[in-house]
Length: 186
Image (cartoon, rainbow, N blue to C red; front, top):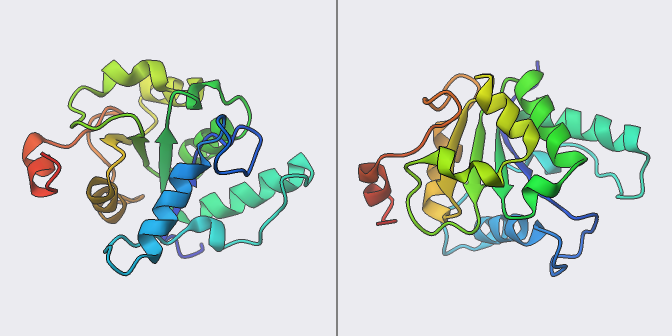
């Protein structure tokens, strides 16, 4: 088996690679990469997308699908960026969630872009979830920790969780208030 140290970042692209397109959440992925590149930040991201050859958005669906599978197989965790658009994604995000949980058995860090306070009741955010995530939380097959989109909190989750260190909480995992204090979040 391949060395699984990457973070697979999933987000609703809205059918575009334009970071300022209103329907795309790629801006959050680009922010993660900016934190990684900035020497004033201690955030490090081993991006699973960099581990496998790129494909173009115009590639055949089967080619894209195989590339995504290969990236997920090299990942220790999925970072799922959740916005108000995510639940409307009907192609790649549901596929990525399904393959990550059902085939790769990797945990999901669900990070909410609109949330700027500690998440201590993840079920209250269920209206944001794509059906693929909701089904796997409901049936207990997904290991998920729910966090706000915060550099310190994301960094900790990426460093802490993986296939052999999954979040507790049967798909509804969250950090304690003490943990949020230690991140300087509250």
